[in-house]
Structure formats: structure tokens, C-alpha cells
Length: 94
Length: 152
Image (cartoon, rainbow over all chains, first blue to last red; front, side, top):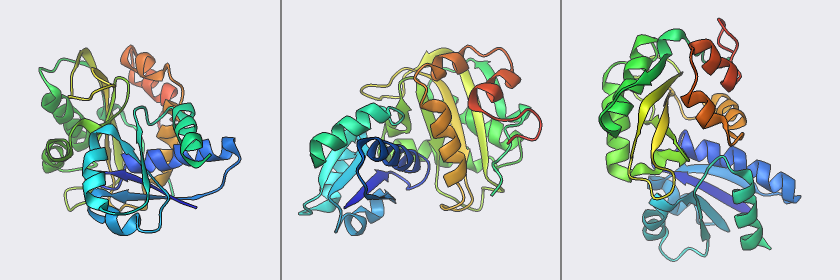
């Protein structure tokens, strides 16, 4: 399973999302590859991804960029809330 | 890799700013003072928010200002700015912002350790408020888990 964390520039915020998504997956006992990406390369990065994690602010741009990808877009409000990320991942993957 | 230090020059407490751009500029000036970036980097951090929106407000009260690596980044660095009065960045859930962290990295790979450090510190939900109320640079470093002089 592949998950992509997306932010505008591909550093900083997407890396924090990646770190905390990995923590959330650990707690759930799930394993997945989590990559960080910027918006410009999301179409390629998401081609074989099941889930895309991003902020509400960027969700529309991500949706437009990935076109007909099957990946589900999950919007995260608080990037440091591992429980929020875990609950949303569990709903999506469960 | 070694983590970037968080020098006194990189910490600004109780800054008064009129809007989010001025808040990001404070974080940019602190990166310049601590030798991490040139002044143009602040313009690029502002441009990221103008282009992509306030997604940099990644938790309630906390903005992580940053831009892509570039020639204006001299070496990886962090700055922390607390605001005497919070300002809105335009985020639907996490406004207003009390604390701005400036992040500069010279390549996309090298920043993972410092980001993991930030993630550890900020996973405590009360920490933004405690940093906002910090009285000294030492207190900010202690809250973020940085050693006093060496930085990390």
C-alpha cells in the first residue's frame, strides 16, 4: 500500500505529515509506504497510491492535479494530531 | 546529520506584527540574523503562501513558514517567532497564529531529521500555547527539545 503526503513545495509540511502518518499507521498496526510530494509532481507520485494526505487548503488543487487517479484524498486539519490522522486513515483503509 | 542549532538570534519573542506577511518577515529576518538564509528567502516564504494558501498553518496557532531550497539558503536553519497578538493567516480551522516557525533547507532530503524533531515536540497539543508564552530563548529551546548552546 502506498500513501502520499502532499504540500505546496514538497518539504516541511509534507515531511511532518509523512512522519506523523507513519506514527499513526504504526499505532494501527498497518504498514504502508509513505512518500512526501509537492503539488507539481503529485500526478506522478499518486499514480500507484491508495491514499493522498493533504490539508483542506490544498485538497482542491490536488484533486484537479490527479485527474482520474483512484487515490482517495484525505484532508488533515492538524498535522500534529496523530489521532486525527490515524482515525481518518482507519476509516479510509478499513 | 546534525540538527541545525536554534540560536538566540533565531528566536524572537512577543513580536508585534500587523498581518501574516509581517509575521513571516520576522521569521525570515531571524533566519538571516542566524546566518541561515539571505533576505530574499522571506519573500519566497511569502510567495508560497500567496500561491498555495494558508496550508502552512499546520496546527492550531502554528504556522510553519518555508520555501523550496534555493541559492538564498546558506545552510539549513530554523527560527521561532512568537507574536504578542495573534494574526489570521486565512486558515479555515487553525487561525489565528501565535507562533511562526521558519524553516530553511538546502536540499529536500537533509531536512527530515529536523522535521522529525519538530514533529516530536509539537505532537504535544499544549506546546504551541507554551511556546507563545515563553519568556526566554532558553525556554523555547527547552520546549522544543534543543540543547542550550550547541543547538542539538
